[in-house]
Length: 504
Image (tube, rainbow, N blue to C red; front, side, top):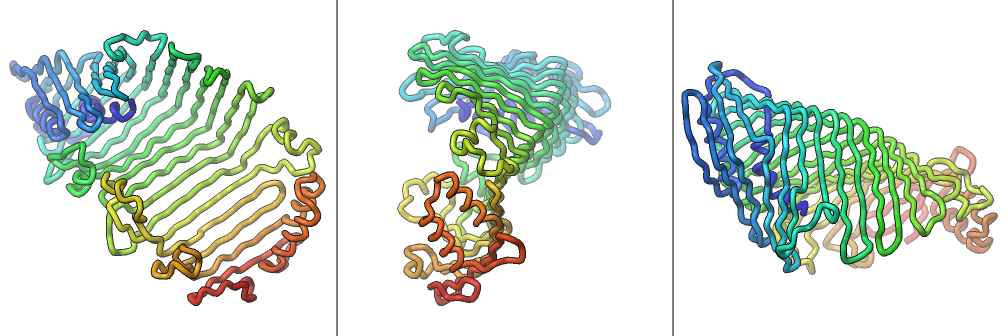
């Protein structure tokens, strides 16, 4: 369903976009003509009746529809009336209906499915200013909402107790600036005091059912992008080549959520909470990036298989990826990051595998921060790439380990490194490109951890002796107690050196 919602959001964007503005002469027809041009460029077929009276333009029986060939369906929107009123000071007020239905009709697994999503607004105000080539919008609303009004499968109406969904934003203040040249560009920011959501399902053909609900506080969004004046929304590679691109970042101050239900005959319940987070995404013809983070996360899970709630917490959890997507003979940079900081879990869970409390209960942390270069051998956004997966889509040419941190059970491993890769040599290292470079590692508390694992009976004396011998081969004692340092170097002849001693 989310794929269809994304298809329909092009219409919703124009009908809810807002802006901060420069005052200039702007007519009602200018605003409506630009909306119509934008929606037509996005692939919508538009029909409407227009009537101008004085400084008021009334657009009646507005119908917008777009085919979805790959999903074998359509998305459409029908509005009774839009009113554009010239204010006499170069600005235009826009009045939209309090409810705007979006209809998705598709074939899903050979079933004909029709869903009607209702967009609602209350206490709304939209003012447009600027010039026909540089429009800015100011929009406020006491509430914006979205809900599942109806769902029909093979002609049968699905009742609300089987499937329901509502999402709402409160106290929305948004601004958008649209500029026209050889492309359409926009800058947007939005704030809302709260987002709430409630969803539920109850499968009539099984015992599966679930209820989901939650909220986010103090939301914010900032974004910008460019759109070709004409585009085929079903051909993303061509849109990118024509200049399509965007970047945006959502933030929130705190959040909580709960879900419960039955799956495969087993009951479950889960709750989550956090003290803020962010989600960023950017894309253009050259690269794609994601950046997700959350602060002070808490998760509690209860299932029939475990006799007590499983509650875990993390001070920070984050994921970042920036990767090239365009084919090029030149090397292109990439970056990857993962953070799980100060992970803790309850004593009941520790007691399952360490009932004697032998291991220290220190918070665990994993941090990986990588950067490098790759040579992209195919346009990764091209659907045809899926037909040629027998060939790798790229080559790794360089990798830098900016930070590697693993801290758990009283032991800490940290390291950095820098390597290059020879893709013409796939024999020296068993099929992978031959690396050359150096990594510096530091391990603290390893012997103490091994002693504790022996005491727990997890590791035998013989296995511990082998592990210690291996550490002695690749590491040397450091300055502090139970500290080992290791410099691992691979030269361009394929030789592996540990602290100056040749291993291979």
